[in-house]
Amino acid sequence: MGFSYLDHEADVGIRAEGNSVEEAFCEGAKAAFNVMVELKQVEPEKKIDIHCESKSLDLLFIEWLNELLSLADMNSMLFSEFRIDKIKNERNKYIIDGSALGEKIDPKKHRLKTEVKAATYSGLKYEVKGKKHYVQCVLDL
Image 1 (cartoon, helix red, strand yellow):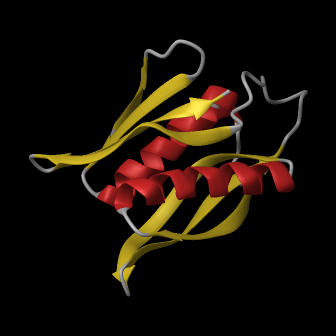
Image 2 (cartoon, rainbow, N blue to C red; image 1 turned 120 degrees about the vertical axis):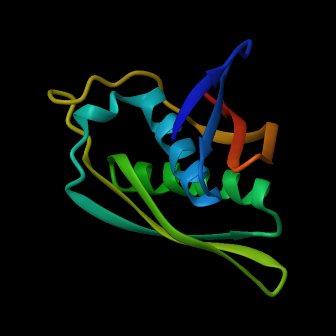
């Protein structure tokens, strides 16, 4: 569906939407990584599996983004595609088993923009309006 950026004094706010919560989370991840690099420059060459869990959907969004940022940093990668088949609710917690696709950072190929340190709880929101799912938060730069 898409993503947009929200006004914020020092950092950057992101808002993503989708036809499902999974799609909204994936669009949010695109928004976060687009802050760091032009997504079109990143080839989906390598797949990294992602697992995270939390007690609520809004908190799960933060866990998802921070796990992606952490794995990108640990593997010296950038991601451009994100997949979540289904967010499960088991034993009073929400669980994501998904993946991110990208490639190793190459300064000659990738025009690096701003480093995203973390997704924060500031401005955190998950909501459903009509048939659309929305997530938002502020990224610490």
